[in-house]
Image (cartoon, rainbow, N blue to C red; front, top):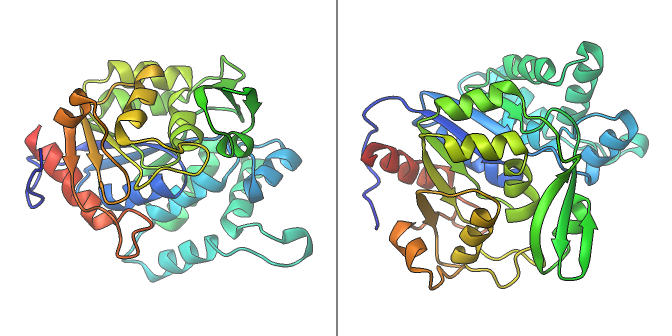
Length: 305
């Protein structure tokens, strides 16, 4: 199925995007073009880089993926907001600050001063004039745990470097999801999952128990946006069908699969093929999803619902 991409949704839909990293930011940059309300539900399992250091030093939820989403939703018409968003992405290169993104430090300080992660995120969103809301998938820092062919692997950074992943879960197992995230999923017209690292970004957000249950019971159109290519180690040898099978094995079923097959095969699963929308979605460099192209497909799917 290859829909036309120039339709306008019959109304302004409530869109929820789930995942993490640069992939979720691309989805948000696309979805803001057609969504009436837009909510990002973001993985908080990161334990590498600046986010990992702040997490270990301050005991806070890692801010990096949250920052990327806030920047993706910043007011594009306001010069001060654009300048601040750009500054948030700046990484320092000196001594104790080496590698830290300014936005990560601002979020960390606001969490410290307010004592409340969501309040801190909403304050940053106000400063940036964000057109949607950014919510963590879990209320507290979590550790990603993977069952693999070589045994148990703990921590996002290590899981990402591991082949033969069978299943992922979180420690602690009973971590809660914010009520605002569950309410947004329940009210959504469309839930967009991905793109992004399958196990360490996408499923790291979806396997929060409350999120899994809410997505499963949601009446929204559920769309999975596949990665542009297999990811070294984590999804080596995967085609799109293998991605969908992994989602299914974690209790996540989708209505539509959106894929660009220039760098990844669809696979032989007939059910996936029947639900697949195949389009050219990559930027000119072929390395990332183009938000405008992705928006056109997602809006068209919403219009066809």
